[in-house]
Length: 370
Image 1 (cartoon, rainbow, N blue to C red):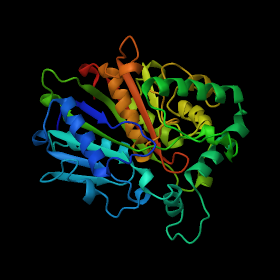
Image 2: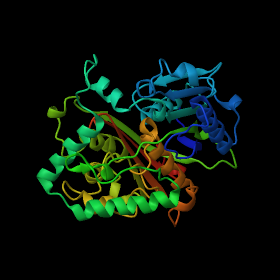
Image 3: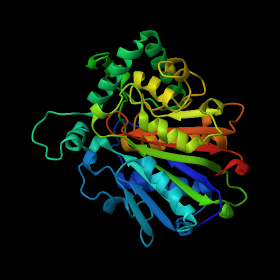
Image 4: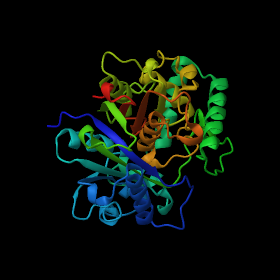
């Protein structure tokens, strides 16, 4: 078991694009992996293990990891495939380093939903293992149920919803993270319109993690201070949809008892809708129940623009981690917060109405790392 702290020393993601038509998925993953290695100042020969996060059902491939394994550098190396979410792949890499199973781990996560006929088909299959008809739960419907429950309990602050759209749009534009959309304000799942929901895009992302003893001069590490994950009840009727119970549990696990979310300099939070953003801010501890609107609009939350205007599906939560990493490394480009943040928090959710969640706490100071 390693006693070293764990650091992220390299990251890369391909451009935000509504649909990538000039590259295959393998080429996108190769570009992300190569970019992360270059950022870390390493070559593939320095990597001991590769962790992949697949999205077979969305993209219509069978055993997708067989296709991208080579592109991610997995040939001749230990490869683990995680099918639940990109953030779980990150957590697995962290745990494998703690367990002393590797010195350097590369994590590759992607989404190329444009290759599939309709992302909702995967939702139908997830809700009903034997897909018999075009009827059933989808991620959008679940987000609507959650938003309506929140609005019923705390009221619907339409001004805050419009402000959140504007704030995220401005940040996404600055970051180059806005994809073209045909959203017009059409009601999709009350009270959510298509303007309140994430816009899908294609992207591949990668990160390199290592132990403190392997960090070399010239590298720019972001240290992991804490990590947490949780999964709630599958049945929506078994959960309180006005909040994100799994996200709250994951945040408590990542932050511990001595750190408060309100003390964190920058937070990157995955948002499943505009109204869902309020509940997510409350779940990580930025505000009490019903008070999340103000917290979600804080300048400390989603300086990257978040995922409402460019959402790479399975990679969306993982991308929030990468954006938080870049903030503490001082490498976030046009959306870098000044002065450079000392701490950052990344919060990701997956499943219907945020059934599962993972939270990563990061710091620029090795002395504060777990």
